[in-house]
Image (tube, rainbow, N blue to C red):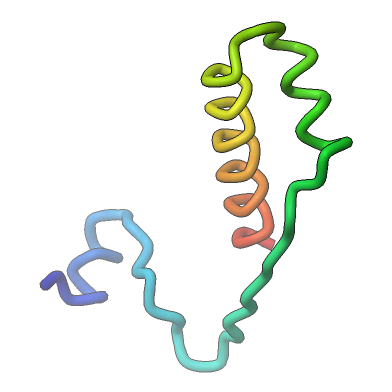
Length: 67
């Protein structure tokens, strides 16, 4: 297991919150109208549409985490 100080020295962030910081948990559901946008962009290729949704959600959560 890496120690947080070692991770920071290498320019990486620890997944553990620092003292004084708050941890916020979020949950959201992808509804039909949201998913339809991705299925329309990848006509007939549900695998590509779902892969793009996964990437979109990962980037969204990453942006929320950096605020």
